[in-house]
Length: 415
Image 1: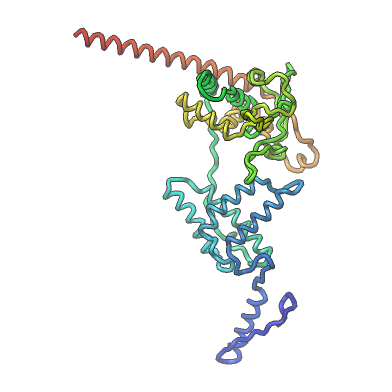
Image 2: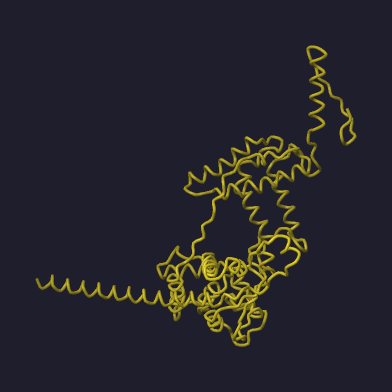
């Protein structure tokens, strides 16, 4: 018989009579014609681990294209996902050994291990399934398989996220906590405190910026001179890339992320306090600590260091676990959506508002976010006032409790 690549092979089958032999021969020919033959890179008997490695390598090369379909940090995330949840369990299989049953058992295993370990791994199972399906799609392209068994697998239903915003009193308590922490550090041994944490927290509360966008901010993108409309421009973000560490990505996280935000007065005040005299346009707003040899000139502080400082301040104020940077973003979005419109919150956060053909072909992309400064200024002012009243009440309560204890002790002693 002649195959699709014009090669000629002989196919024979034996049966107890001509009719049985002919039926077997026809079935063998059909299977032979439809069988995957593979490519120079990948064959039907290639290991799943090799297919995963090649898929990652392809993505990493495409992440360096001028307008990349995937970013390097995303490739790193996919590589970790496959390395943790695919390769250890399926990497030893050959591609032509994969069946829907094997793949279904693998997905079920991720969810089961999550339950046994006391963790919800539903999202992990969904993500791992999606990326592994992409890996096998590539194997189909290379004719190492004719069908993708992973696409026949059932996955758990994704949970609907339930964003939780901070109360206004917690906002006030947070601002008090980071300032108190900075004051406590003054005069202690070690490097001189930068005082950057309160300004970074205020910037997130007044703009809804991601922490990577905050740390990537440069003074050239900050305009505090406009009395009516002081602004910051979101032009970049900090990302962690394998082999490079923390780097400044010269574009926001998403296409809609580039925007100019009108900042409220409390943000202006905080930024003015950390702005050095004669700061040039390329200087980071939140620079890394300078080494004696000058290695860290104009390097921004990493998100890891800022998160570590925030955790230390929260621990000092006994607020551990109550606040994290993304929760500040949710708080800003919630407040703006309630006082203005959800679309305003989306624009402020740099999310794309999909209105179909009209948006794609007729509406110029909005670069100036809606003016939310008054709403967020009010949120912070109310939060500060509420927390200050609560703090004084607690202090008065502690003092009263202490006085009562002293009186009781005196009475007992006299008796």
